[in-house]
Length: 171
Image 1 (cartoon, rainbow, N blue to C red):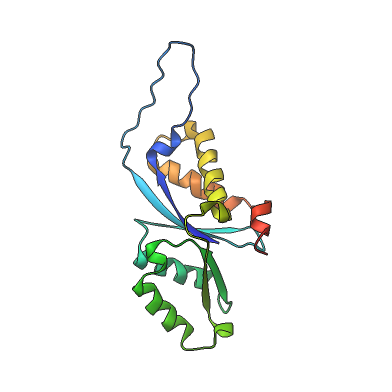
Image 2 (cartoon, rainbow, N blue to C red):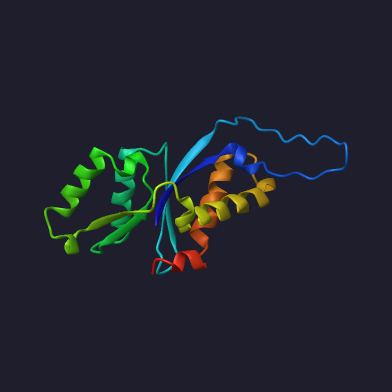
């Protein structure tokens, strides 16, 4: 399952508890600082492959697919993802035609299957993004810079094997 996640510097702020009628301030140096991550979870192993890009678009989607192929050489990839415009773009169709090189569908190197429109609850990686952001929020005290937030986010994703019922739904 593949999806993109947008991590914001403001994601480290969440609920803060304090004494009644006491204002608690959390400094945010640049609320617009942003990092887009492409991620894929292997439903067989529960492992997540993640790679950062400046934004989600056709160019970066193709670069991520190349990355996935490098991580799993000589294996067919079946991607289940949402209907983001860059998942359906002409550039992506051209790329897939080149990769699959007029082979029969059973021999395609990359096959893409779309989730139902407007149904993020179907995609298990959405739950993984939430777990990673929750982890960052729980450990915000470690982060003085956005670079540290990004490092904490990726570290969580790369060090954890995910296993929950929604992930097994597609096995």
